[in-house]
Amino acid sequence: MEYKRVAITAQAIGVLNQLKEKHGKLIFHQSGGCCDGSAPMIFEEEDMYLDDSDILLGQLEGVNYYMNQDQFEYWKHTHLTIDVTEGRGSSFSLEIPLGVRFIIHSRLLTAEENSALNKKNTDNEKK
Image 1 (cartoon, one colour):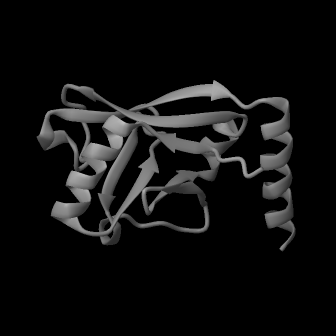
Image 2 (cartoon, rainbow, N blue to C red):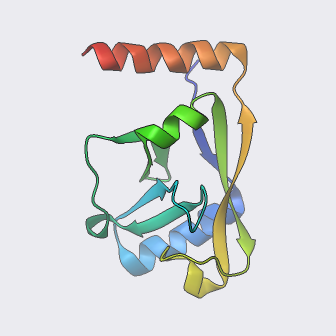
């Protein structure tokens, strides 16, 4: 069985598809900044600078989802589900003009998920 760290709701897929149609290739990045807390934000792929400190958590509908490694230390034992809610966030994320913003719902990983996913991270660090 393949375990994943991130998932997305049907409602969020609808918004994501609108954004892909309008903007082309996109990426999610979960910020850890002071202004947006831990909000998932979406940008045009070429507008977001990624470096070695960004970790790929997974892919949602063909869109990579990244988090900075410092932020990942806080979230590594959780499963994240991306959703949308009405209202404008205070960010530069592409969904804001649609009158919605992406949010996360989190839950702790099960013992089995935690073991499998953290083993995968340990194996990747050894490469």
